[in-house]
Image (cartoon, rainbow, N blue to C red; front, side, top):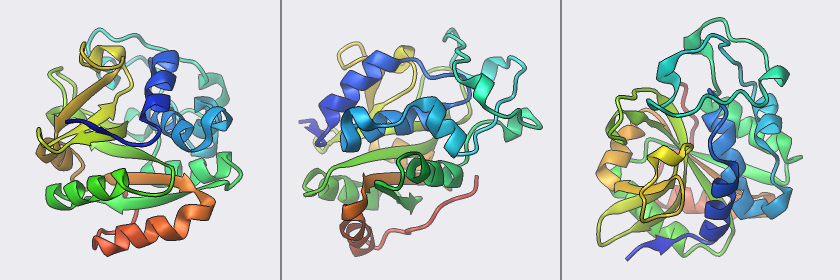
Length: 232
């Protein structure tokens, strides 16, 4: 049975309202959606997060930035600098973590969790489902193993639950086309093994209210997870 994290309904509602992501801004988009689980309507928007995170845009249209057939949205681009190359476009995990805290005036904190691996990811999901604090969870993944599309890029998604019976994690993606018809728009489940593999050399950003930072760090350390940010 699918276990929904606290705030999952808020995330699903917000995702339906804002889909799809602006092109090359999956990180700020997913962070904005995840933040509604912590801040509700006070969560900053995609552009504010992109600016605070140091996101940069490659202005030339490149089909591979999104799944085939998905719309190209350029909302917020006028507020962002241009990248030196397509490889330098988008948002780094370190930039996003800092940007989330900056754009929220440090009302929230971010706990990075690098490459948890499948077994520790399972333990983390169980502990988070029972946590006594509000949180959002953003994952930095590589798309190749997570969709049926010919799409192979670094990407950010929001995690909102898991199914221990099916050994799967529930994610809110950034395009409607990536959702399961039987789930909220843009949402689907993927196997925990595939999800952990897709986070290899990447990881998770656990977003919590600033007052809950100590509890969140304690949870992460109790599972012997690597509390560090990554650079890919």
